[in-house]
Length: 329
Image (cartoon, rainbow, N blue to C red; front, side, top):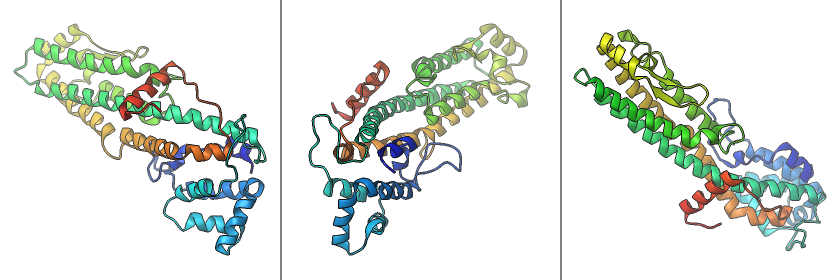
C-alpha cells in the first residue's frame, strides 16, 4: 500500500482519540482498532519506502521485517509513541527540496496530498474545538434559563409566567442564532454528531407533548411555545398562554415545571462527563495535541503539504481557539 492508498482509505484521525468516541451507537468504533490498522499500513508502506528503516531495526533487535515493527508497536501501551520514534528517530529524509515533496517515497505526490489534508484538518479541528467550547457554554445558559422556570407555581401571575417564558425563548433563540448556520449543510459543525444531536435533543425537549400530560396539557405547544420548522426559532403566543392559564391554570403550571426539569436535565446531560459534548471535545483535544507535537515529523516523512487556507467561518473560530490557548500558531 503506497501513500495514495493510505490517502484513499482515509487517514482517520478520529482513531487517534484513544478509548472514547462521541457517537452514541454502542457499536461505534472507539479507536481500539487503531493500532491494528496502523501496523497494517506501516507494514505495507515499509515494502516501498521503509526498507532501510526496517534493516536498521533488524540490526538493532535481531528480529526481522514486519515482526520487528509489530513487536515495537505491540510492546507498548501507546499506539502513537512508537510511530513517532520511527518517524523522528529513523526518518529516511533529513531535508526536503523547495517543492516540499519527499522524492524518496514511491508516490511523493500522493504523500504530499495526504499531508495537505492533514494541514487542513489541523486547522478545522482547532476551529471546531473552539465552536464546541462555545456551544457548551450556550447549552449551560439554556440549562439555567430552563431552571428559572421552576419558580413558577400556583401563586405566579400570568404576567410573571409570560416574562419567564419570554426569557427562556430569548435564550433559546440566541443559541439558534449563534449555531444554526454552523450546523447547516456545509457549516463548520455540520458533520459533528455531538453538535447536531445537541440541537435535535433540545428542540425535541421543547416540542415534547408529554410535559403536563398528567394534568391534561399536551406539552409546551399547548401554552403557545413552539419551534418554527424552517427558522428553528422558538416563539411564544401570549393569547394561547393566557387562554390555557384561564382554563387550566393548574395544568399549565404543571406542564411548565415538568418542562423546566426535563429541558434542564437534557442540557445538563449533553454537557456531562462521558456524554456528547465533552466526549467530542476530548476527542478533538487528543487529535490536536497529537498534531501539535508531531506534524513536523509527519511533514518530513510525507512532504510539507499545502498550507491550509480556511474560509471566513473557520478562520474566525481558529482565531478564537488561538485566543483561548494564548497562541498564534
